Length: 234
Image (cartoon, rainbow, N blue to C red):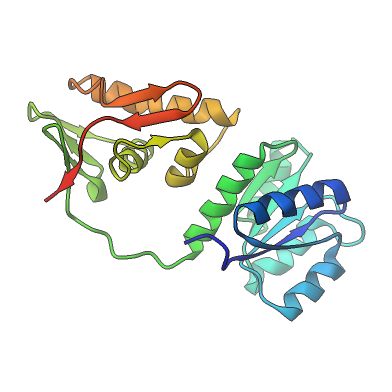
């Protein structure tokens, strides 16, 4: 589980940006240290291993891409930050071993979600459960992404739709904010943060509505979404 036991190092030469990232992640329970160059990073990693490095590409001295290449051998995972917008810059960073790439300026909530997603990918996964989720006559088999409607119709959900439905059935009757849904689903964000989650929920709603389940997901204005039906497991 991503949280206070995870150690993160932020490498950013802009002091105001670095301090803002460090303070934001600390408020969300992470142990975070900051430095402004490669030498500072190396010193911190020698003193104690890190679970994640958030690394700006444009640094004085050794740049972020060179650092990323070094760390890809046996170092911690890297989340690259850059104001560079060219697709080739992103591709190079990912090919050098970065786990993710976030362009500046960014929504801090998106940074938080990407950090949590990377840390969860590194954590050992518990054995998958094959017990289906039951709600209002529906049967959802999360492992196979298969959803059966009350009328017996079977819906083969995409991976993204299955992740979103799983987030809802694990938290029925609770309002889930867009931030929380992004965290729970690891939804890939392309474009504005809030819009990405709204589109993902809309896609799932359309699939449910096609089999009579349009009312299962309620929009709670200004707060997020809520799954309406009671959920049990066999």
